[in-house]
Image 1: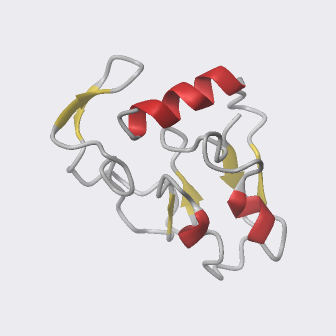
Image 2: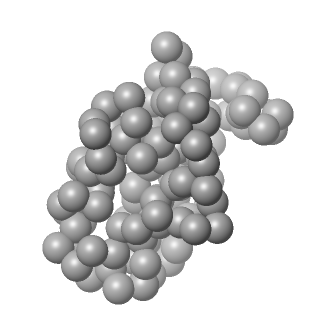
Image 3: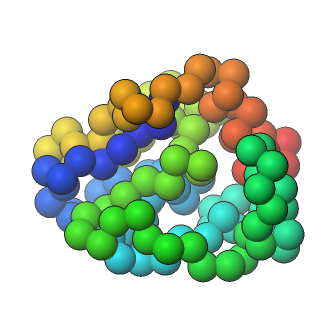
Length: 116
């Protein structure tokens, strides 16, 4: 399952630099698939959608930091636990019960994002 940042977020930013996929962005900031990955130019996402990895995408939250589900791997392939949750001082980086994913899916995403 992907991790989400709840409304309890205090916008401290501790989580952002910890993400190995650059899946965490400050509220209201645009995001890109290329940020922190090896994706460039036109790519076909695992769901079949074609995107330009360099195009700005609409922020998921305007208020607090947020995690892009399509880039979150729960740190699989990098760390033993999600680093955002490990450093969050208010424990607002939590599993998203509405977006449950198995380890194989997360590892496949990690390989896709980093061309491995």
